[in-house]
Length: 77
Ligand SMILES: [Zn+2]
Ligand SMILES: [Zn+2]
Image (cartoon, rainbow, N blue to C red; front, side, top):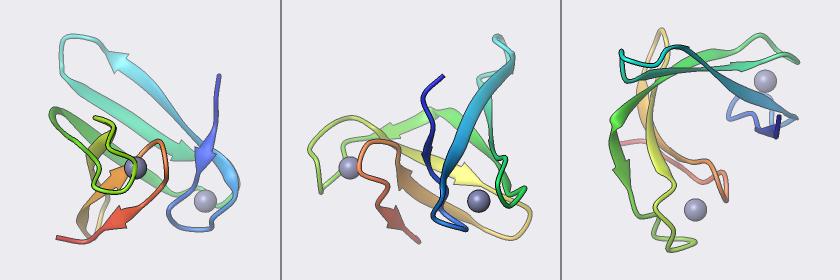
């Protein structure tokens, strides 16, 4: 499984798992720092940076933000 750059610790150890395909929720977790966030799959937008539809909405225990899973750009809105 491909790993991504963790938004928290910036290590290449951020990966996803789908626990329930019907829920529309994907879990993201970093095995380096233990950071965890969930993705709402109904929110997916075109990234301004790489022009691909890879910008997703991530939610963790403190905040919610946009994150591109292709170029790893974070957009706190
Ligand atoms: Zn991390
Ligand atoms: Zn991007």
